[in-house]
Image (cartoon, rainbow, N blue to C red; front, side, top):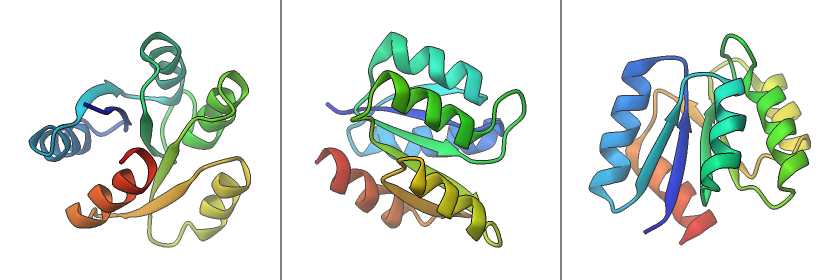
Length: 118
């Protein structure tokens, strides 16, 4: 069962994502900001990370860079709102494997994860 770390400062987004992923056989860990995401990544070694770009404490791009320093093979999918294309490009250049636009289309979330972890 693939393990996914969901990182979002909005509890409802984590809850919604968790429900979707668990219904499709994924094991889920959660973090509410980038700093917590880096700690959880090191502790749990998830197969993939679904991470919001805009968060307090440490944003998603900074967290992505920290995770990639620790694990260059980390599989991270960035999540962003429409209109943040420059942030998406920065995330891709920092090593993100894919990105999703909010609000999520559940089929796109599952397809993106399936591409990365099967």
